Length: 516
Image: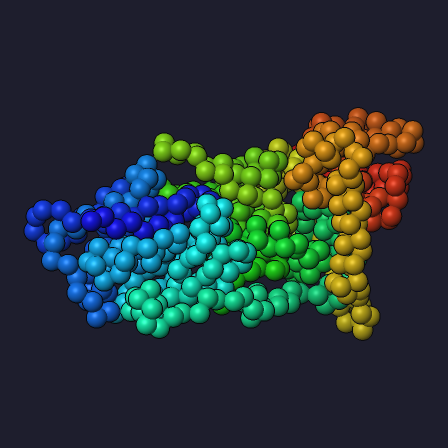
């Protein structure tokens, strides 16, 4: 008499349906779990046995074998407790088999039978719906997250006893209906109007926000680099529902969804400390998990004290910055995580921080300055579109009562520029958009084909670009990045053509020659 319950595992960012088979066998009473389980799954034996007893049900005095299929997928975490317990209850004859047909069951059990939070409920629910399942039993706290998937009945389970009563028809549990309470609470970043002075830096960040470009701010301590970076989310356009679901999936898998939040509506802002490991930044581990660059997907990754990060840590970002995804390979296979983030980096010009300052003299030897600046490799600097100097703010601006432009006003211009780009990349008359532009959201995402089609220069602009290529010794990558940046500046100005003034501003954002 075999009991069969369906559950779900998470591999990378996707769910995999797991069949939980429970059966008797000859031998001393006990439970054996097979099917590539990890330690947390093996420990389900004690949790399930005690939870079933405390739910007021009799645990069978037999040798029970639990098989988690497919055996090729590693099962990790305690979310198989509830399906195993339900399988034991069905096997013992307390419930008929047809009560759990066409149903996915997930949840961790405490010893008193309370069903606890499970990681990765959102991708599990998406997989359940795609696999044709109609109903899903989930922990009560995870019901808002699972309910983001349409056409799937979500039953919030508080305890194992409640689930048994529901399936036995004694006391039915009402399906969960999503409400506005499950949305992420409003987040208020620093407003640009609170930042005194630094108008040229604000302009650079506006251009970056409009086109999704990477930024490096260089300036002395206390000039406002961190404050400006933290104001960045306030001028980024609102996320679409598709982007919100994309980000929510990553946070669900990483088990970092804020408490009481089902859907992330605001663009992520991640600011890891410079002591982070390369696995913490790009993802990894024995069982790979998303890193900070994936948690910053569709948002901002802020790296303060940029040269203080380990060289290996920074270099592993080069490929994700180009491809917008990170692939982590292990002997058992490889996983791909989304990583379409916007890098905002900040650094001092030298170890003491005062090189080039207008008032305070630098105490570093020239060789120290050069060594410090060269911690950032040329290939990595080449992937940053906007390099901007952040000077100290003078007393008159700090003490003045002049109110700067608000983040909301800047965001409206950024949104208008993004709308132009969205129209451009989804134009059905464009041959490019029909073929390869499906994942292109902003100008920074453009590839060679789009650049060739949408970033044409006039004769005057070509002369300016030719001179810049020679004088600044630009690489081919830098050439294409300047074209993308000038396209964004033209979009902000509402211009169909890239004018020489737009190109000139883009060239001003190239890195200055460092000390040699």
